[in-house]
Image (cartoon, rainbow, N blue to C red; front, top):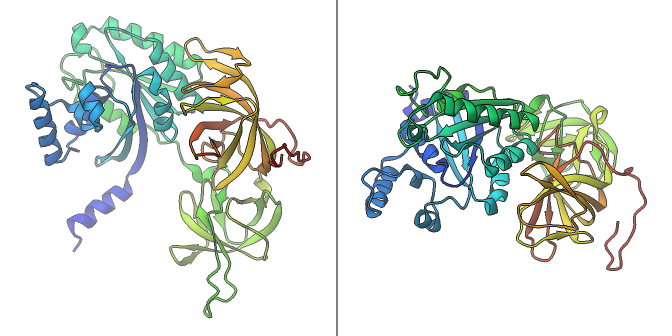
Amino acid sequence: MTSPTEQLSEQLSATTLLRFATAGSVDDGKSTLVGRLLHDSKSVLTDQLEAVEHASRSRGQDAPDLALLTDGLRAEREQGITIDVAYRYFATPRRRFILADTPGHVQYTRNMVTGASTAELAVVLVDARNGVVEQTRRHAAVAALLRVPHVVLAVNKMDLVDYAEPVFAKIAEEFTAYAASLGVPEITAIPISALAGDNVVDPSANMDWYGGPTVLEHLETVPVSHDLTTCHARLPVQYVIRPQTAEHPDYRGYAGQIAAGTFRVGESVTVLPSGRTSKVAGIDLLGKPVDVAWTPQSVTLLLEDDIDVSRGDIIVPTDDAPPTTQDIEATVCHVADQPLAVGQRVLLKHTTRTVKAIVKEIPSRLTLDDLSQHPAPGQLVANDIGRVKVRTAEPLALDSYAHSRRTGSFLLIDPADGTTLAAGMAGDAFAAEADAPAEQDEDGWDF
């Protein structure tokens, strides 16, 4: 007989996973929306709710402040704002969720980049009294740059405008036009009151003019388009396994998590950046041989030929190999307090490979307010988004970010202290051929 725990495990494994992020201006009610979503979907443990009720009473509030379910930092509770990205995990019978509650302040825009970088859906909140403001446009632009496939406009605090349909319609029209101009593929507008619970989990009796889904209904039914099994197959090598035991004297496997696509035994593959080719002789999954494996499984590939493969290499199908290059042009979101300047030496981390690099040029900085380009800014500071040209010491196999958010992204790191400087998204075209001759700077960095 199946135990309740096993039944729950089977139920969760049968449901799909949706990663989504919330964003919006300060005091638009993001944390309250997330708290209401967790509370009304029965995803809050009793002790958590008791802690929130106690904290609310100590602040002189009669009703529990559901925003405290996500505002976990002491500074957040004291100031009543969100500073860090708060991740929460919950599930309904129809779907599992990982949500990221991101800050609203302009100086924490970089935190939204972190929260939305892996999201399939972004919920952008707007205060019905204020309408679309600068930070709303900023968050819509970030969602578009990160190619988040679905955007929900949640027009919050409808109770403070007497649940007026014309107010909602005006805001929805303005935001939809702006987001569509950015290339956002799908926009859904929902009028809500996070504080009162209107249209969050249960339909609102105060807005009979609205016939669309509630926030939770939309989250449960939106198509999850992150089926990476049909994408370009990529396996970044994380570890080379050579047990050299009497039982397996010649075993040599290449372990890692499949970033995208599917691998099959007998398939011809190429190891990048070396370009050496072989065939898949075997695939080990959880210690057992299988004939086929797909993302996001962690596997060990065995090759027919004894070729040089090490951590940081990428194994790809021979007939679907990306070009390699040392010159990368990309859009980056600068996340560090220290600026990123032309001529700066950095480390570039792409999947499991980290190489030395130099920032050769910063062609432009994006002004998110009106989407204009500020040419040749010379440097990028915290929360800036701009185009950069980087020269690496070794060739890399990057996909376009438009084709793969995992193998088309990278990090720029300060080599002195390991601080993450910027998150990059590779463009569709590369600036130079992969076999460009290497140069060497005065400190011995090869380029």
